[in-house]
Image (tube, rainbow over all chains, first blue to last red; front, side, top):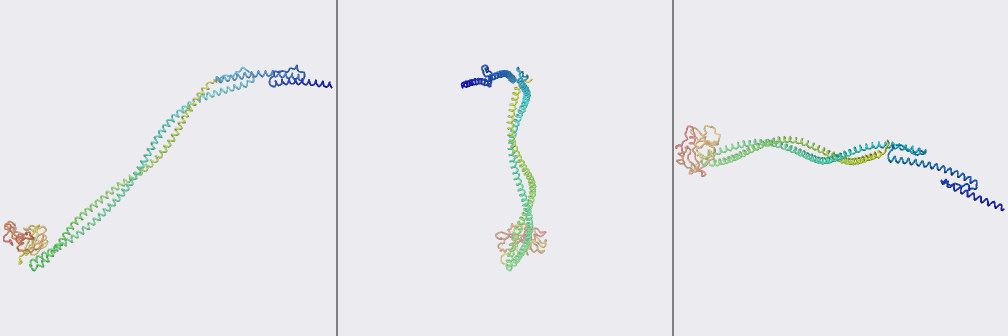
Length: 409
Length: 137
């Protein structure tokens, strides 16, 4: 059993030694795993041959990795330097604006070849862009100058147009007022013309009534004339009768005188006869006195009928004159009526035309107001366009100045 | 006249009224004298205006008619109302046919002697006064 115990103890010591060596190897491997290839395993201290072989392999891998890491680091440094040079060159080119040259790097690492090629392409692209931008800037500058000139001219034109439109609007406003006044005056003229026409028609009716009255007066005068003629004839007949009566009375008077004479000659015997004769004579004288009065009356009637005849003739003449004057007045009024009708029609047409004119003028004024508003907006837009064109020109100049910094030739 | 009055015929020539003795007048004629040669128009009394009446007087050759303007009537006049013409009046009057005058209605009216007047009016006879033909009241 002691042998057995000794062996066990030996095995335990061995196992503890191997664990320590393995831990040392593991610590180095952990450092290698963390990128530190410097640590090495001291192989001489290892008693376990397996671990020693492993340690030698680890050390050789570390040597290789370290060697390889140096190479990589050198290469990385070369690339870094190349990149720095490329970046510095590009920065310089960009800052100085000189795109005329090509990129030359001191590092000739193959890894940088694509980069250099890409930078070259970028530079070529930049050159092309700069050329295009320069041309575009020139064109833009030229165009913006033209646009500015056009916008300025447009603004001036718009301002003139706005002024003209404003003046036109003011004029149209005055024209509107004048049209309104003209329309009112035309309406008044039409009303007066209508009143004149109505009055003329009334005058025509009055003249017609006057002529009818004159015709009646003339007919009445004729009737009066005929009545006067009849009256004259009857008066003449009465005069004839009165003459007969007077003749009879005269003869009666004569007879009575002779009777009285005979009675007087007969003396006392003829007294009664004389009285009767005297009475007869008195009656005859009364009759003659009456006939004298009748004759006087007939004379007065003759004078009156003569005066009435003259008056009737005067009435007939005046009626005829009245009819003639009425006819002349009717002809005149007919002419006036025609003129008044024409005037009324013309005034109505003028009134209608002025109303249409007023309506049209109001529409024009409204349109002018709208045009003025649009013109104001256009003027404002033109100012904005001019401002934008100026800003665009400035930007074009600035762009041209900026592009000018780049040298591409 | 038996009763102391005379019947006078009052007649008018122009504007004046005369009287004549009714016995001297045969009748009174109208204005239309049947025979114009019998009419006596122009006398010492004047010419009548319209000669509407005639006083028919007897004459040696028949009857003569003194034309007058009117016969106003007959009037019985008292003899006392008759007056003769004054001498100087008779001397200066151109006719002897005025026998005198009578007061009628307080107006003196000449009384004409018609036969004398007719004779004076005959053609060929003068118109001067003659004493023998004058009638006196």
